[in-house]
Length: 578
Image (cartoon, rainbow, N blue to C red; front, side, top):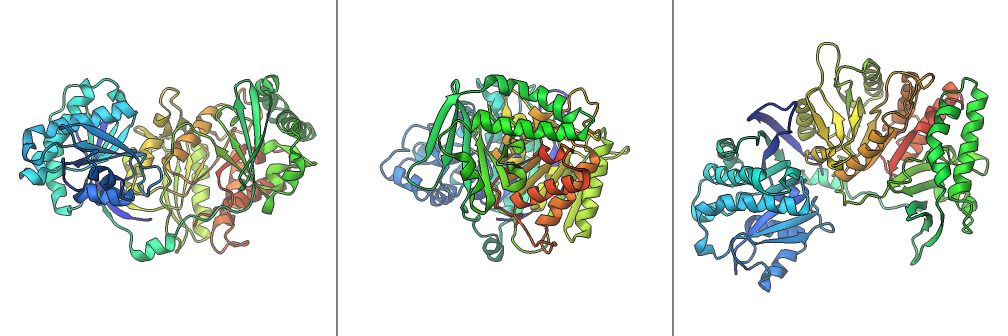
C-alpha cells in the first residue's frame, strides 16, 4: 500500500532538544484502519451494534468486535476498556482497545476527558508508546470537533502527569475521516490544557488512500521460497540448533554453550582480522574463526549440517538467531572449504521478544525511489562523502533520489526527515550517520538527526516505510587499521536492527564493524546496481545483491579486506526492492 501526504508541523510548548522529549499529537485525515500504531482505540455503547469507526475496525478484524458485542461482552460501565488482539488481522497494530461508553442516553460532554485518561491508562498497562484513536462519539451528543478534541486531549495530557507508568506513552494520533474537521480538531488540540512539565509537539497529516491500480501493483508479499533455515539460539546453558523445515516436524539438538569461544571472539576479530598488517595473516584468521564457528556451534550435531548447507535450495540460507547469538560473525562461517556468506544467498532472521508490524509495500512499478540521509549531525564528513557518492551513483543508474546530506552550514532535522516519509514512498532508505541504543527502552533506539533522535517507534508511525533500510550507522570514515576498538558502535547497530524490523522495515543491511569509505562505496555500488531495475543482471533479490557486494569488495580490495564480512542482511534473502 502506498500513500501520498501533505504534512505541516506546529510546535507547541518548548522545542525539541535537551530534556524530556515532547509528547507528539498527530491529527490525520483518513481511515483509522490504515493507522500504523501499536494500539487502535475505538468505542462502544451498551447494546448498540458497531457503527462508524468501530464498524470499520470490526471489518478489518474479520467481525471480532461484532461477535463479542452480540453476546454483550463490551457492555458495562463508562470507561471500561477491552483489549482485542489484532496480530492476525490486516490492521498494522498489535491490538484494538474498545472503550466502553456505557448507556447512550447517559453519555455527556463532561465525560470526554475521562476517555483521554482511559487511553493513557491502557498505554501504561500494556506498555505502548503510541496509539491511534478518534473523536469518541462527540457527534452523538452534539459536541463540535474543536471542543471534543480539547477535552479528550486535555484528559490525555493530564493523565500523562498522573498515571503510574505513563512515561512510556509518547504519541497520540487522532484520525478523522471528514477532512473538513481537521482544522477545528487542530484548534482544539492546541487549546487543550496541559499540566506543567508536559510539552506537546503537534503534527498534521493529510493522506490519500491508494488507488486500485497501486494496490494491485503492490500486491501481496512474495511467497516463501525453498531454502535452508538454521535456528541457532541459546537455551539456558546450552546452544540449541534446529533445522526449520516445511513439514510437520523440525529437527533440533542442544549442546553445552561454547562460552569461552564466544567471549574471546571480539578480541580475536580485532587482533587477528582487523589490526594485522599482513594480508595473508588476516585471510588465515578469517578462515580459522569461520571453521571454529562451525565446529563450536554446528558440527557436533548428528543432523549432517555440512551436507544440508551445501545442498541449500537455490543457495538460500537463513540463520535464525536471538539476542544472545546475534553478535557472532556468522558471515565468516566457513564450511566445506567455503565462506557460506559468499557461496550462498545468506541472511539473518532475528528472534525478538515483542511482536513487530509489517511495513506496507511500495509501488511495484516505476523507477526505484531512494531516500539518502548522510551526516545529519554535521560531524561525520566521511558519511557525507559516502551519501553523496551513493546518491550520484543511484541517479546515474536511473533511480529517483532524494538526498538529505549535512555539511558545515546545516544539519538534517527531524522535521525534514519525517515530512518526507509522510509525504513520499521510498523503496529504500540509505542512512550514513550515528545510531544510539537505549538499554532500558528498546523502542527509544534510533538515528541521530541534527535536533533530536528519530526512534524506530517513530519511524513505525510514518505514513510510508521503506522495504529496505541500508545503514552505515556508527561507522566512521576511518579504516580498521590502527583503531583501538574497531567494533565501537556494533551494539547500537545490532539493536537498531531490532527496532527497525519491529517498526515494519522488511529488510536491513548494515555493518557489524567499522568499514572504510573506499570499501563501503565499493559495496554500495555493487549492491545498488544489483537491485536497480534494468541493471546488468536485472533486478536481483536482496540476498544475491549482498553476495555480489561482498564479491565486489574481494575483487577490488582482496580477500584480506575484512569489510566483505562486515555486512549483514536481515530479512528474507529472496525479496526484492519491488
